[in-house]
Length: 394
Image (cartoon, rainbow, N blue to C red; front, top):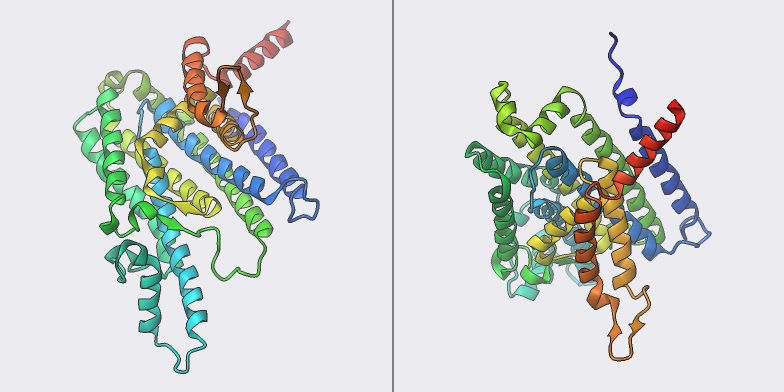
């Protein structure tokens, strides 16, 4: 019997890619960059950031929905990717400003003077004027792009190897991932962490050497890059969870002991999934924060990873498109509620301000989905598909 091709076994991939392509083209045509201006530049950035959140949600769905590892630390990898590219963005932008300001001097500045002035500009806010060791390659875009993958990937590899070889599972593993995230965020809050402590890295939306390019064009470029990353990440994740590897991964989720008894090295599969999804999360973060404009340790706090799990649960874990739907739905709804779009509700004795009540609403939504619709929003598509098949059979 001839085996079906990867695409034939996963027809939903083509539907997803087609929908993403049409959405990207439509938004671009309606943007200020195209001259129409129906969709503002600020909302283009919001949509671009949403696509990045969809990408990390897909990664979370692989590690939790398919492999059964409830990681409460994947936003740490997301943040590390943002810090890695943010270091170059801040260094290069500051170097341009310093060079321009010193160019009017009677004696041209030396490279060492420029380097010292850049250090003072960046780290003066935390009381120092020297570059920490971790900024040794901040002037190299190639190296910082490499660090986007290498640093989170190495951290996930080491952490996963230590945890999985000890056969830590279930809630204990979730606590360990949360502890790792908390430790990292607390360290970054310190001024001597080398990443400006609580101030974080700012001005990331000002892309070096593109000062003459309007933000409308830059926002569209990042929007397209985010869409492309989501498309590639979705296909890669779909490939991982298909075929024999996908069966083993789902088997680990459903009955790890039986999979181990069948002769599969469970720890290797879990380590592969954990590391791969950490790298995907880091790439998403590297695209997200130049659009957000700032990154600080609060972005890596454990609560962010908990929100990520909520998105996947609402969308429907164990379904890649469900993770995308959940992340997009909650992200855009959050922007609407917390950005002043949702009108306040006066009750006479009290006025509901959605900026204060949004998290309560999100928590109630999570509880409702868990109790009433454990399949999530994505489960509705399964019901529609089954219904159409049954009607077609008749």
